[in-house]
Picture 1 (spheres, helix red, strand yellow):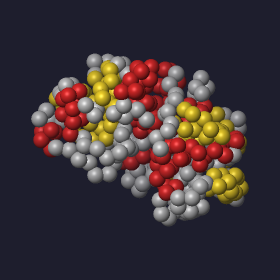
Picture 2: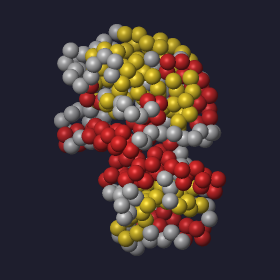
Picture 3: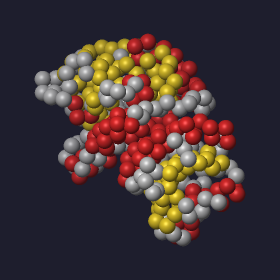
Length: 343
């Protein structure tokens, strides 16, 4: 076994502390990665506060430099810059896996942390650490023209919004609404704009209008104003809802055009909406979760061509508890990334 330094949640609702964890020895197709930058996601907060599953090392969107490779690795060598997302293995043989949608693996994918290793049954521990070991298939080349810290959030927040935008054909001649301008929302705006769609932001804050235009938004609708929402009826081909707090979906369903789709990504608990709003116009409510290997690589290639990264605030890893506290208070624009070389 290999040892590495990590930021450990030893118990529920306690600050993370620096500790030593074990990583497995390299298997034949493993890549050992020196983690440089790791994004801080709302799901990290949820798992850190959750009862059970402790001790836990969170972090599932990160970049780093290859330190070593197993003997059967063909895609990487020592010194390569790479990226890893929230899935690090799958069964590889079910319908979903063979379709390149390992995120929907019928046997459930192995998560970067809080998952179960498919070989030895151990609990996976995440990227808030100086080293991570992953199977080659789930490691991606980091585009050399992009800022590594800005790439890290693409591996979770980015792929989460990328897949539905591509699935529902965001592009020229299409009007796409984005609900919320946080970690997911600001990347959805960047992607939709670069894909050629007309982009409208739904937000509760008028103050976000100026910054939103810089990201590629064509129009801002203040969603807390009933008249402004009523004016959007039957307009949108696709709405990507990234708002994390529970809310009524009905106004957004009504804003859909004929055969339009509302893809709810943020709040995945109980959803409230008026079924009649769906009936009038053959409208749909859908969702999506993360992405497979094919989609993730396509997203990174697209980001490389268009120069897209997340807007991030980088903090030393030793300030992880500050980042988590500020994230919980929504005091970030738009994603925290911790520098794991400063642990």
